[in-house]
Amino acid sequence: MGDPIPILGGTGALGAGLATRWAQAGAAVVLGSRSAERGEEAATKIRATVPGAEVTGMSNEDAAAAGEVVFLTVPFRNQSENLNNLRGALKPGQILVDCTVPLAAAISGKATRSIGVWQGSAAQQAQEMVPDGVTVISALHTVSAPNLAGDDPLDEDIPVCGDRKADKKRVAALIEEIDGLRAVNAGALEMARIVETLTPMLISINIRYKTHAGIKVTGLPDQDHWS
Amino acid sequence: MGDPIPILGGTGALGAGLATRWAQAGAAVVLGSRSAERGEEAATKIRATVPGAEVTGMSNEDAAAAGEVVFLTVPFRNQSENLNNLRGALKPGQILVDCTVPLAAAISGKATRSIGVWQGSAAQQAQEMVPDGVTVISALHTVSAPNLAGDDPLDEDIPVCGDRKADKKRVAALIEEIDGLRAVNAGALEMARIVETLTPMLISINIRYKTHAGIKVTGLPDQDHWS
Image 1 (tube, rainbow over the protein chains, first blue to last red):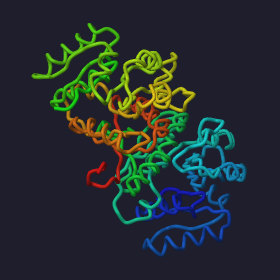
Image 2 (image 1 turned 180 degrees about the horizontal axis):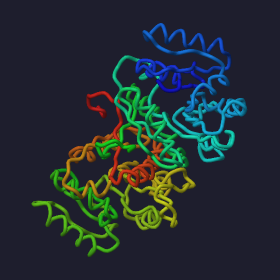
Image 3 (image 1 turned 120 degrees about the vertical axis):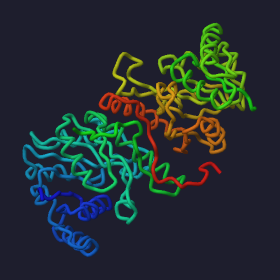
Image 4 (image 1 turned 90 degrees about the vertical axis):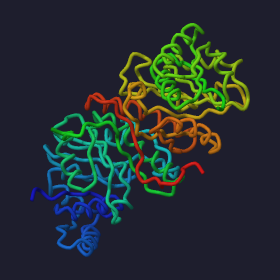
């Protein structure tokens, strides 16, 4: 067993869905929430559904210190506030995986539209706000929370953006612990400007097809993408 | 046989690739170019490679009048100029399928970056510029020209954006004449802002994997999407 996987905002739909799949894969997970109590409540639910799940709950700040690669799954509306609160908790050498999506829904607009972020993307805003030495990777925008929470097998790709391949590879290894997810190197962190907009595109498709769509990238070589 | 399919900018890589695949499917194609001679040269090449191909070449303006659903496959750098030249050629009731992508390469930037278009997307710029009564549909940004030109079977999805489902359905029917392509309703024309950026994302992936990537949407129902 490696480090537990901290999921900040782990009581939300995406965070809880990821926690459930990782628990099913045998990975230890720490769910962070604004209050340690709510985090522990969410962890209790997952332990009740996944036999043997190593999932505990605590405050976001405590969770952030529990593992090297930290996933941030809060709504975009709360991203800045959370990053401010994490200034004392994140340490140099850690990786913060930003999963937030700047949907217009954050400002009472449509979920099929995105809003412009000054830094270019939510992930780039996160990179500006984390302490020096913390690296932001952008991932997990396209897998739907209902699919993660459900029992059906997954078969989707996860575009991963970041400035160093070695960091993306570490995140990819965690993502690929979840059965049916393949991490795809989508380029530098600035590509999050595009990847973050896949979510409103898929929401638009979901409305039309009454489904929970995801994406796959065709034409990739069969061998390990990250070697 | 229905109308021939006009492809404006049909001497470029995307246009010629589409023409080849449609010719293989038995569809009649008209290749438009700035000069009728260059259009005919490109058509001659396709007739040489696809036995029985019904492909002819002419000027863009003449080609635009040859069919109801017209594909515009010019580089974004030339899109406005082409649309200006087509003002007298396109007629109310026609559909213009805009396939252009506002890559930063159009202004000597990187092909992994897009540029902001005042109207929101290249397709919305096209909608502003076409004569009244002409409807713009946005499609065919993610299938690579080398894949279209090659002999390997295709297996990709094509997001289609437009404001009326009936128009998208007509375009989808033409796209799906090409074996291995499935048209996916990605929403209103404004969604082209997102779909047009899939190209630089795929170019970024292509650089890393030395491939010609495309996309598929997971989770769609099996039945006919357009009924």
